[in-house]
Image (cartoon, rainbow, N blue to C red; front, side, top):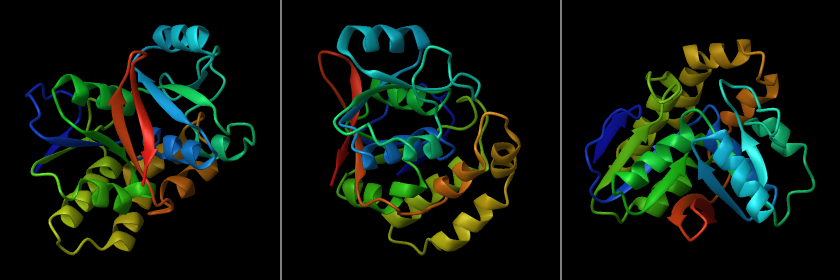
Length: 224
């Protein structure tokens, strides 16, 4: 098993990969699936997201520098997703500064399969990948460039569980709650106060999120 920090490593990935973005991309994606979303396509640019949405009737979700682009329907906020009751059967296209870029990066480096994760689907992700001969865990970090305590801690939790070692999830949650990433999230103008608690709701969902490719692009789907 290998744990990588940020998106800078361009070494090919052999085997499976788990890309972690706890604050907030892959927490938001998990809540979207819980609200009935069918699939989520991933992109690293606003223009590509808008092109996919126009061509296929998708809704756009995401952020640039934390803020929702003016043209997008949904931001990268799990709280906002929980307030929607009109997402059943909808397909989204998601752009974020680290998480979606990290998943695309892992695909381009040759990882198969790729899963995306956060605290809210941690144990389900471990179950989905526990039979893999080789797993690389990528902690996406801040803008994919700077390690963050929340992604590093989540990656370490996943690694411990995959190795069958004591993981102490309640302690991990409290450490993250008191960390710099949580302080940054609480202080951000683009974040709701409720986002932090939703991000820290460890194992709230009993599904994993697997990445695949089709003729439209790279997408994530909910898998049991």
